[in-house]
Image 1 (cartoon, one colour):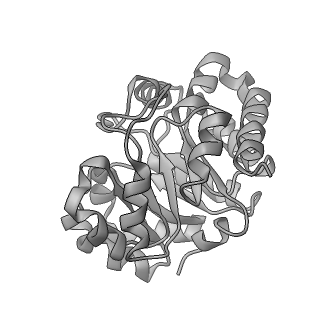
Image 2: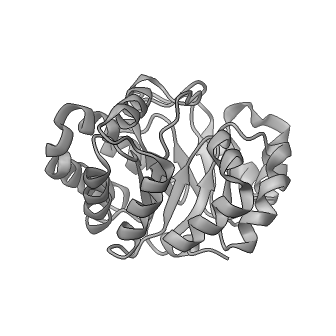
Length: 260
């Protein structure tokens, strides 16, 4: 069992995402620490990849910036950064990565390194659910959860995915790639009803959420909300000067999510 359960308690969990190495790994470290201090319950850290198929333009651009930065954001440097961060924060940390880096590193070696540096879970958007058994037992042996995603297209597989999940469920709110949306039309209530029929594992809603009003609304339907593109956009606009804008944004979302 990983530490992820600690992120979901009496309060709704605000889960921000940041791309490692954008604009630098030192900046990423400080952004993560600031988000934790402002009330983030769990933080997702993106490992930059050359072909991030689930990402929209904002996070794709962040991947490019991270990979092309002086010195680059290599996997080993990211591990080292996470190890430093895990000594400075007391919230669970989760990697969002594509399967290729994990496969090349080796499943067991990758999961062992994750456990060593303080990573509690893995989100792998391009790993089909049917292939999850190849990795999940190895990850579990190291105390790392493989987080399952449930999308609007999951249909009759929703309950199967939910039943076999660990850590928390990532409920994808919209079709397509990541990105900020002014409106979300997916019937999240129906998806959550199917999930709750088979498991009480925490569930967080992501893809498109970016305003305090959206956070407050979707927080009533699940155990937390996930926000990526809005934070990455702040970083794109402010670069190394994004620390204070990120602090203000995260605090506004945490407050809205847990308003009485």
